[in-house]
Picture 1 (cartoon, rainbow, N blue to C red):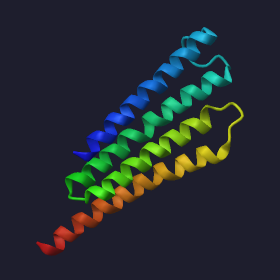
Picture 2 (cartoon, rainbow, N blue to C red):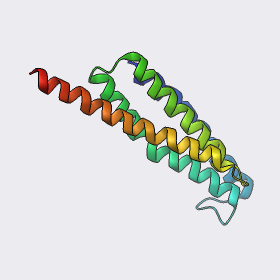
Picture 3 (cartoon, one colour):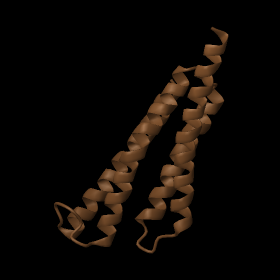
Picture 4 (cartoon, rainbow, N blue to C red):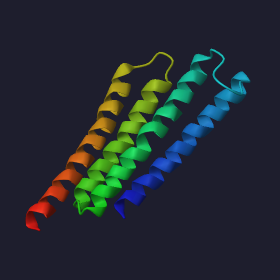
Length: 131
């Protein structure tokens, strides 16, 4: 279960992002929303963006693994997702955002989604042809 390794690593990263939001909420004494605090807003968006993309990407990687994708490719997808999320988080959390980190992270994350989906379709269609 290669996907489980990356799910565990990403879950730990998600917890770190959660603590970052909690820390900013305490720092600015804001319970709901961001109250206009840009650093808190950015922490919220990093956390939220992670929650929006990572579960679906992991699900696709899992389906690719279940469909028989070779371990090397699964590790490439897992590492790319992890690096993409790290890069995106680093870029977005900066108030003076270095856009290159955000863009790189987005490209890696979307590439994982696309390549996982293509791999699943290719593996599925190859089984249909052999049946």
